[in-house]
Image (tube, rainbow, N blue to C red; front, side, top):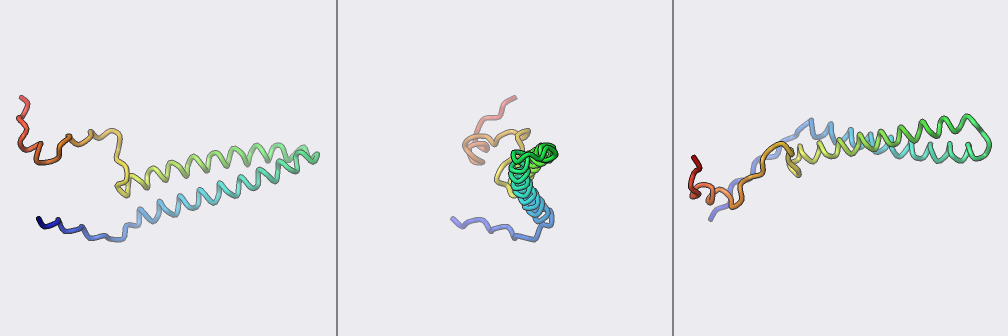
Length: 105
């Protein structure tokens, strides 16, 4: 049995854009976590204004992590690693079973 020819891979700018967006979100998350740690140190040292910046950096870090995870999910779907939950699952047994199964009326 001869295997099917592999589809040609081509450059997809959308995938590059998603990968760059994931990278940017993760880098921003890391910077905001570092900033939150620094502001926390300053706040415990007695600077009262640092508490506000600590809260702001923490909320920003949570938002960046959320956006990064959502972009990773989109990237996985675009690469074919996952599928849309709204689409039905393929029938069990494959194509040959579907071809020989009796049709419902």
